[in-house]
Amino acid sequence: MRRALFESVVCLALMVWLAACSSGHSSPSDGPSLKANPKTIKNPVASTPESLATGKRIYDRLCADCHGATGRGDGEKAKKLAAAGEPKAPDLTDDKWDHGSTDGEIFVDIRDGLGSTMTGLNGKPGIGPEEIWHLVNYVRSLGGKK
Image 1 (tube, helix red, strand yellow):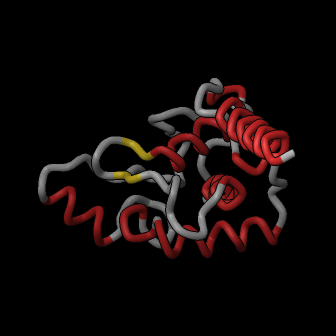
Image 2: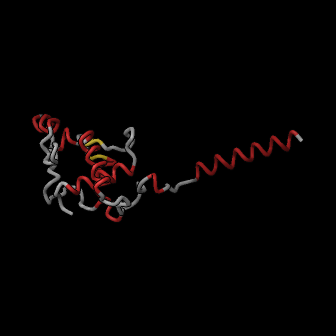
Image 3: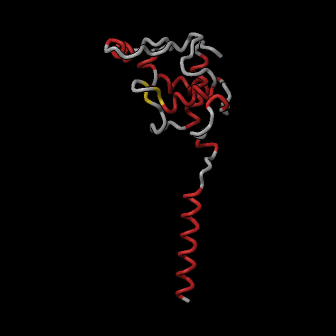
């Protein structure tokens, strides 16, 4: 009886472990797959006033230092980086997008970062895929290319 119970517990533990290890699929709350083509990723968050307000709060806290309060790339940190010879932070209010203009491309840029000067938000406390989508909506509202 003890042996059968032991074998059942080991079998159950093995099944749980295998299920956890082999689950290569991400749930919608995990955000887009790292393997997905950014151009084809669709924004699941509607650009509502609430989404824009959430995106602005995140932008003000994590992005304005470089991109500036209005998104023109004139934040204090950007000025210091430019003085040190680093590339200028992009103006998010114009029609020029250096790293892709689809919502998915913008999402991936924000999530993963660009080079050494723009760190990605992936893994920042309180920032998940939904927050990044709100930020995409807000960046779009600054007047840049739609």
